[in-house]
Length: 218
Image (cartoon, rainbow, N blue to C red):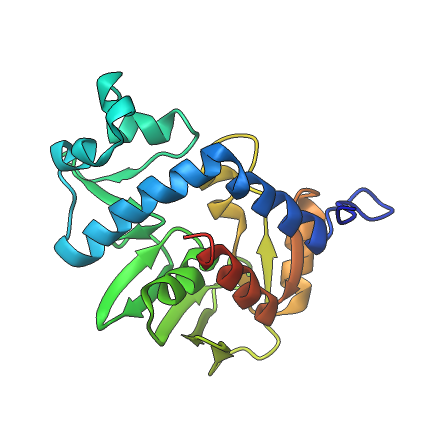
């Protein structure tokens, strides 16, 4: 039996949101996105910006035969890749450009991430103990921590909470990333959840557990 996705007031519960999130990524389409996304992230971390022609050549033969490029492949699945001014791919959850408040230093290189879940997940995927910086959307405070294989350490705000979204119903950046944040305190996170019945809030340690389980899908 699945988790209760809402409480008595119709607001999302954390177990319900987690269940919905993993149900999305466990579908055939979700697994396809993970497979292709892993190729992109590997290139970004090993070689830097990814030229379109190189990305298109990474797609399975069936997709190339249909004339579908990598950018359109992701767009058709409500996931817009991040591009630079030259039309080169520079981001897929992990980004080479500094337009996000979420960062992680992985193997000595500073990367930006689309949400705090990405900032916790990619160090676990890539195998590093990583300093992470984010910002509280409510207070503007800078929050720092270290991601390790066993949990979060050195959290600058011991009472930090996070919000999580199921990531369904449209653009991954809008429906998931923009709503997955770390807050300086419980009250701020719960206020965000109260304003959006589709998201749920929990202590920061729970964010690491979600990130670990997401990393396990890669």
